[in-house]
Image 1 (cartoon, rainbow, N blue to C red):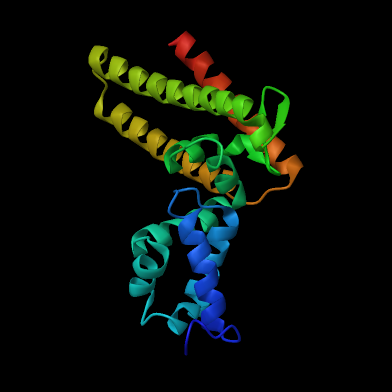
Image 2 (cartoon, rainbow, N blue to C red):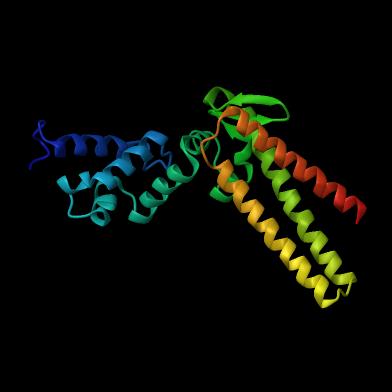
Length: 213
């Protein structure tokens, strides 16, 4: 099968790959459409028209390692298209995206009642809001760590109390994991708003607890 035969699937695949190599993928600006295409090619094994296997296809025809291509597909499956839309505007690690994903829905990002469509035109405001959301998430994490360290340094708890504290931490970790999973899924606007409200409620309760401690 020859790539110069326009009637063959290999020609279509080769043409698309050549275009993507020159622009999106090599520029590390993978779009949701690129990730969707990668997933389709991997699952359908369409790469076999030009390469022996996926391991060979990725570096030879995409200029990507197999692990990088698999990572892009995983990001699409976990986060959906919104992650790629946001990444086109501001660089954001997966961990940071998980922390703020509750504020993202319907191709928009929400902050204190403001709904901002994710688009290049709103790039400046989006970058600002992402920074604010990340800062809030990191601040909460530092507060929790500080509370644990302070209490462990000043209080000698009985074994039973330490056991209860470990159990509470496990439940908190389970709750955070569930929230991350829900936030990374496709939600209706009303459900997304409820999730954001729940996170805000949790932050307020933790702040109240810290002030009282």
